[in-house]
Amino acid sequence: MQLDREIMTQLKLWKNSRRRKPLILQGARQTGKSWVLKKFGELAFENTAYLNFDLTPSLRADFARTKEPAQILACLELTAGTRINPGSTLIILDEIQECNDALNALKYFCETAPEYAIVCAGSLLGVALNRSGASFPVGKVNFLQLHPLTFSEYLKAIEPDLHQSYIRLEHIRPVPEVLHEKLLSAWRIYLFLGGMPEAVSIWGDTRSVDEVLAVQSEILQAYTQDFSKHISNKDIPRVLQVWNCLQDQLAREDRKFRYADIQKSARSREYEAAIEWLVLAGLVSRVHNVQAPRFPLSAYKNSSAFKLYLNDPGLLCRKFALPPDVLTDGSRLFTEFKGALAENAIASSLYAQFGSDLIFYWTSGNTAEVEFVLQTGSRIVPVEVKAEHNIHAKSLALYRQKYAPEISVRFSSRNLRLDGGILNVPLYLADRLCLLIEKACESKSQDES
Image (cartoon, rainbow, N blue to C red; front, top):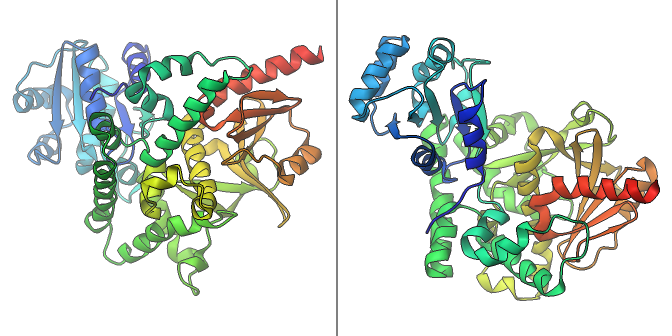
């Protein structure tokens, strides 16, 4: 089935930008980077020269031989079997992390051949760009990040009519109740399926839960295979230990990552490299604690206290081994897990909108915790997440009492509403939080004037 990715808009802006440089598209394995770039070539260029360093290892020799763009282009034309014209041909260099010389060559394309449109991708590109000895053209490339499908993208693919209603929700007022219930139901299904393109496509084509589960299992297996292929033998056990305990860490009420949960004698220095690898590979996002929500938040983070969220809510469900009937089952077991699933899904949405450098969580000793604190523009916004209808909690109230934020956000299954300085947001509107915060602040200012 056809999937429309919102990143296409950003790619078209990149194509037409006056400051266009070679583009590096980052993202975890199986998020659809190669498909997106090929589709972009179809939509925005006359032709595409697709080259894959994993499938064609001999390409590495061409880049090792010369750094001159004209000579490299002549080799690429022969390998791709197509004429490469500036302005009308998109050059795709896939799995570029396999060739450090190709990464380095991007500098020379930027400086002496900027008229050529070059995009690069790779399943472990984040790791490659940070490894020891890598030569990287700092300041000579643009970056974009591809995430799993958002709920909005999922809706557009699976329930296009419902998506049309969804994108019209731009104002701070209650959603019509029938639409609200439909969107909540769709969001719960998305929570289970996740946003991996293959899983969403299989669901759209077959509505087979078993096939979706098989796809999710294959993706998780592919991730663990990457550990053995791309990590030194001495580090593989620790990466596996962190990876295998992620769901257990998130199942706890406070979600904070504890080394002792890996093994009692574990120390942070022993596992820092393993966690960093998972973050750079795009498999997890790391959210640090702040005890003082002041500008800039990064200056007040506690580097030793953090949470790790999986890159996709559906994969987390699979790691929990939750059966599909938990979506409608009100059993205590799923009620306990639902908080972790909802919080992980919100973390994924916030990460896609704000980036990892602007998302933290807040604690006040052992007495209170707010799930997320965002730095957006000139505002610091606390964000509380409730999986269901019950929104009673003391932590957000304590935060508001201590810091008097302009606006606070509470996610739950309740309808959209601005109640004083608290913006109550249905879980399914997480992807629209930037817009909703702006609208809420405008409304609050008008009421106060």
